Length: 235
Image (cartoon, rainbow, N blue to C red):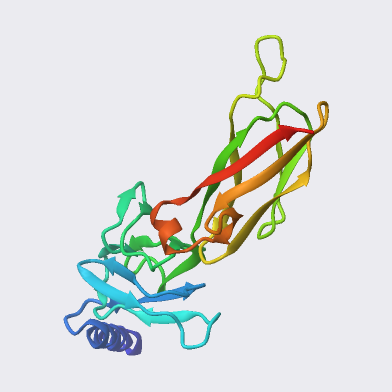
């Protein structure tokens, strides 16, 4: 007899708990968001018809934590993405990203069903956008030319254009340096001059005309810097 009375009491306790969570008998779940690396404004996350603006932290380097205004009912499907993003097979691209950065889902899936986990905790990591640093090498007939960029310390070897007999032609060669992050200075220089034949190569172009500058808003809008010019002449 005692056992039969305990079961209804337990059922009532469960119903009371569910009603307290959802108000109508269904459990509800808040959607928490944690963002790392955010430095610039503009990030807006969206799910289930509601938006959440994420602002940079007051102290640089800190995580940003937030929660969507409305909770989800048990069984609702969700997918948290930058507002307006294109989503293909749960991979989101574009959308309302912060200025100069791209934020991507990290660690745990940004989609699921409310109630599948004890807590909905979505995490994003933001990185500074990088852009191309390219140009043209003219007159190169020697071998061994190596260029360097002071902002990345990357060394880029450049070989001359060859004809069908593997002889240098001196034709233009496309120059592709390592990408440079937004608001980072760059300075392309000749690390090793070409030999056989001996040549001297000089670098011009970039934002300052001598192969250097800063990857700024104008460069970002143009998706990089493409006016580097390396001119090689025989000694």
